[in-house]
Image (cartoon, rainbow, N blue to C red; front, side, top):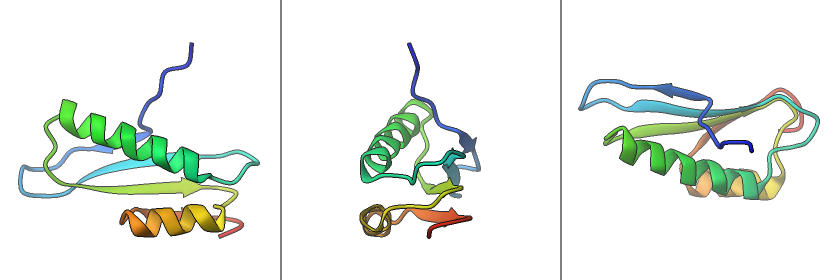
Length: 85
């Protein structure tokens, strides 16, 4: 059984923004479905760790689908890709 996990979590002070990130190094582009799962995992982590403010980001080696970029932008999630935007 595979457990969902957050790849990067960097806690900061109470009044600063913590960092929560997802990293994908594979052939497939990052999908809207995966983006939704990441947001849910990040929200759960923020509750568990009592994080008031966080910046979410996704790094995907092979990029994102256009619909995924629209989703990330709509939700204020930073992103970076090496290939395929």
